[in-house]
Image (cartoon, rainbow, N blue to C red; front, top):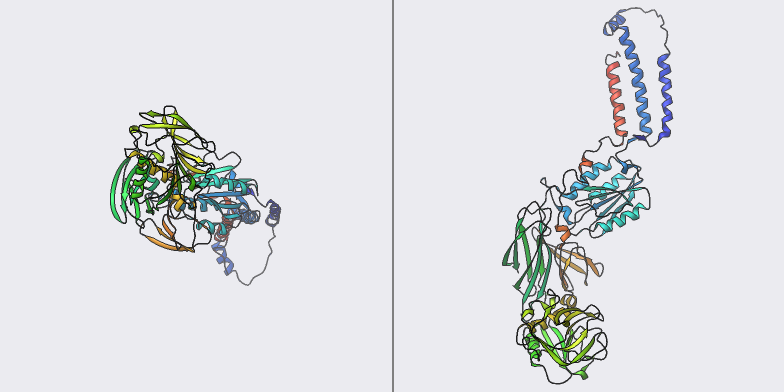
Length: 616
């Protein structure tokens, strides 16, 4: 308890005046009157003993002095300190508005609403001269209210905060808090979230308020990938990752429902243990403009923003590639593999020799078969088959005698180039050695030497095959080689970057767009469509669902965050327990209202004690 304006306490000396007046007794005066009837009646109503009159006299003096003291305490701004946070000049409030703050308790109150309720109550106990700054954050931090002492303006900003379906990044908010803290030190930071900060540093006076529920269960979709199937028209491979939060009280059964164009396609059931993450891969049939919908349902799930993903099926535009050989003869097995890709409708081929290089027509990828140009192409992805002697970004040496191998050793089994390729059944003939420079990663080894690698050279994707399909025994006559060529072309060209008009974004990312308007079809309870103007060349993915611009660009945005799906629980009495706010001193803060209420009570008491029998 202390006074913010102690200079006004000298006014307490005014209390000498009533003390003097009460100590100085007035002498009785005799006055002649015409009748004593009135005085006799008054005497009957106020028949009191001498000691009671004396007590009431001193009680009246005490109440007069109390009224004076209370009034002076109001002028001196008497306050009660709540804790160390009130001793700072500035308080920075970091309010989490990420997706997980939408989780609701048994009363239907979201974590964000609970944070605002506790914060409103706490701010009433902070002295008015302490400046408050409000920072709300999700993927990015936003200063909603710079430092101010105007509580009404601050509370208005606080009410406008809503949870957004975006993953949170508290590190960005902490950097913003440090910047504000340096303006008006000393500064305290209040962090209101459903999880505690990790390694916040010791340079800030941090007060945590953990809004997490004591018990919470959530299963959600954390990753989705969609791509066309090589050699198969209008078919797509879907990769989905599903996780259960590690603080879940028990295992859960989840059901994934898949529909294409509004028609149910398949249902997958998954058993999840707390902290588990399960990956599923399945194939669907569809065409452009159809919507793929993935809906997850789990027992006891308390968070819905990560339970559904909708995205439009992409248009698979044929890849235009050039096949360049040093002579007119063609390897029949390579020709067969490339012809299979052409028949699927996902590939178009140009053929030529070294004289056709450099190409007059822009292609998506080039296949160098037994030949490499003197100058490496810097703007075109490449597949190198059976490389000759070469010194450049790729250093290669042709073997004098090809070496057959009955099997290969896999270096990176989960690389996209090896997707659906049966590596255990491959037998090939090595024809050259090459040095894997840059980011080239070996995928197959023949003995100790890499014979298949993928990576980037000179800023372009490249796949190097140090073998000859025509000389190999158990490679060209199997389905593995056409699939390998298809995977290599799809990976080199990278359909997502190539098209750019039908991508799946994580919410909070910035998507490059063109046009004047963007229309969202939001996911969730019911279908909501809304159109917004485009004011720049990028749009923040701040919603869940499918979007399309008036220029024809399409895409989808969803949470897809392992961190947000992994909801945390809070044990009773743990650090950041909101009980600290709920049980705080109700008299904390400026006591002006309490003192004025005390003045009114004293006046009422004085009136009741001394004036209830007043005669007029």
